[in-house]
Amino acid sequence: MIVTTTGNVEGRPVVQYLGIVTGEAIVGTNVFRDMFAGLRDFVGGRSGSYEKEIRNAKNGALEDMIEQAEDLKADAVIGVDLDYEVIGGDKKTLLMAIASGTAVKLG
Image 1 (tube, rainbow, N blue to C red):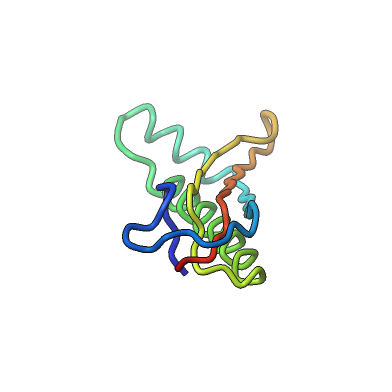
Image 2 (image 1 turned 90 degrees about the vertical axis):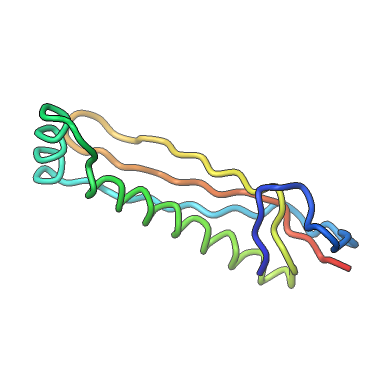
């Protein structure tokens, strides 16, 4: 499955638009990770545990989107957009990743 943020696939004309496909993934954080991330923020540097969770959420959302496109018998998903939202309050924070694009048949 070709997945691209561009509106086309070079050398492959779009012959049919099959519709918008989306994928969502929600990952939780925990108190220990939050505590160590806060310490990392205080002393400086990157928070590897949060970066890993963001990657996991992104990959999960993309996998769900691709699965929808495969169900439509698409050759590609074009115009892919990734969005992230934080859900929750002080006690529990969730990260939601959303992938959306247009499933297409290519010539």
